[in-house]
Image 1 (cartoon, rainbow, N blue to C red):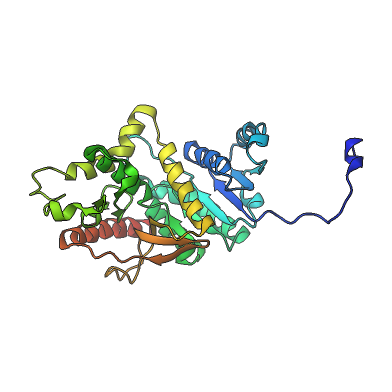
Image 2: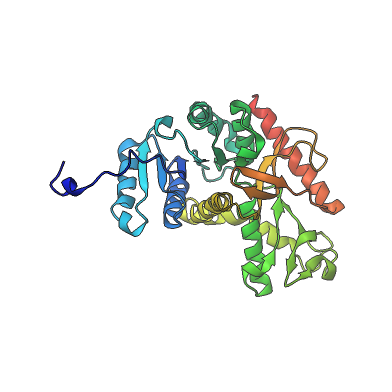
Length: 330
C-alpha cells in the first residue's frame, strides 16, 4: 500500500460490478469504432474488448485508458475469449469481414464458422444479455446465433436495416434540400441487396411523398426516385472501394441501437429479429421491421401496412434470406 493510500478510510465493502457492462466481440474497424462511440457517449462504465490479437487489443484499450480522465473513467478490460464477458448487459458481435467484390450473403459460411466457436461460450457467460449482431450477413447470422444459443427473439437482434434507413433519409434529404432529421423513412427486409424501401411511409415536413407522387419508386416513376434506393444499396460498397472498409456509419448505427435500449425511451428503429407469425411470414426468418426498443431488446414489432408493390418486394427479400438460411444446414 502506498503512503497516499494509507489516507483512505474504508466505509463500505467491495463495490458491486457496474451495471452497464458491454462486451464488444471483435475489435476490427467496426468493433473498435463501436468501442470509441460507447466510451465517448458514456454508455459503458465497464467495457470489454474481445479479440484474438492479445497484445494488439491491450494496446487499443490502453490508448483509451490514457485519456480516461476525459471519458468518465470507464473500466476497460480485454481478453481473447469469453472469460471476461460474464455478466454483460449487452454483447455486440462484429467478428468477420466482407472482402471486396463479395456480397454479404457470399461470406455466410465463413462467418458461421467463427460464430459457432464463440456464441455458446458467450451465452453461457452472459445468458441474460441482449445480443446485437453485425457480422455479415447480419440477418442470417442473427438467425444462426439464435438457433445455436436458444436466446429469445427479443434479445437476439440484427443491426438490420437501421443503417440502411439512416442512409435512405440522407439521400432523400440531399435530393429535397432539407436536413436528414426532417425525413421520416424506413428500409425493411434484408440488410442487403433485397432491402425494401417503404415509400408509402416517407414523410417530409408532414407531407407524405406518395400522395404527391403515386408512382414513387416504381418503374413508372418519371422522376426516378428509385435511384435513391439504389444509392442506399450501393452506399457501403462505394465507400469500401475507396477506403477498404466501412466503419463509422455502421458503428454509429449499432451504438444508436444500444443507446435506444439503455435509455428505454421507446424509440422506433428498423432492426432485425425473428418475425415468424408477422407480416404473413410462417417461417422462422430474421428480417427488419420498425421495432420499439426497450432495456432488454425488442419490446414491440410494428406490422407495416405495405402497398402491394412493397409487399411483393418484402416477399422476395424473405425468399432471399430463407435460401441463405437453408444453405447453412443448421
